[in-house]
Image (cartoon, rainbow, N blue to C red):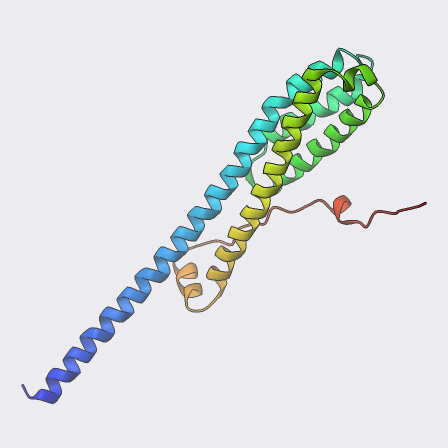
Length: 188
């Protein structure tokens, strides 16, 4: 074997090692990103569960002061049930938005009852719920950031080839409802 053949074989072996390493890296990157999407979605679910656990206490506290507001309590209870039974990003997002609207109605009722607003249990629940809403908002943003990174990896060359070959599916973003996208009207 002459020196030129040996050099070509070494170059060929190094090229094969580089290509295999690149393929392994691209595949592992897609797996890691997909797992981050799943993990970040589960973090949203953790915060939604925490909020769902607070809601019955909040409803019971308000009921003690405003028992005649039956429709609002039923709406909150139904919306909470919808969140707990939701599957997938789209369904969870829609149910979560419904619950947020129902909670706004519940807090609007509380405004009519000064003694309720002064109740320390109600204030504590309201604070915890507010903090949880902030965590949910942060978790949604983090989830959407991870989804963007994952979807980019699935669509950009050369990792898009692996995404197609190994069936890495596009992830869905957690989206706000159309009603929250409208510009509010301000009047003085």
